[in-house]
Image (cartoon, rainbow, N blue to C red; front, side, top):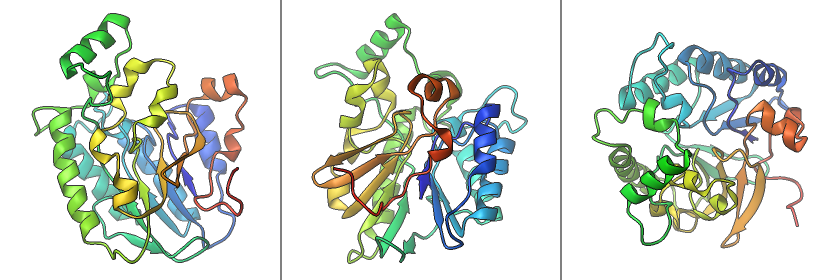
Length: 274
């Protein structure tokens, strides 16, 4: 099972998380990022879910990597990420830094591979530079909060951090058993196509990297799980199913009349959507 973008700072979302339950004692839960911004909120939610699900697998979203001014934990960048990894290990939640687990239930065996790959501003209009795309975003007032709260320390930029994560993640994936298919889990979409329906196309540059466009093929993905866009849906690319599994913000669910209690998605549904 999978979900993302819990955003538990919203009381309505927190209430939904409090009511989430597995269907059986053997259920695993993938949490594909954006649990919250404050370390205490992240720990609360993941601890609760780990008490209920047999295995919980987490990968960070951009919100976990923010350093909000009101969070007592003042860590930034990679140091903040490593702090969250240690938090997860303490409560028994798997992270991108841990050995990949193999799911052997319905749809398996598959290697569950949580990835921490950022974005590098390459989801931008053709024939434009990063600087031009950012200028377009600032001119239109569509600027991701990451520009102010997601610090890349010790890297000189978020795209430099992304490049480092690409190298580390590719090395990890190369070590897995190639005979077993994967479920690739990343907060950001691995391919650019899901961003084509964004209401504000300027935002796409904060949504991924073109370097992962063929990972679902290169790494034998049986499914790809992601969030970030707050557009829960199923799409298919090259015969591989991609699931956007966001819970999202309360205002979005009200606008689209989405039942938040049904937010958890099955990674391998009994019947594939037509």
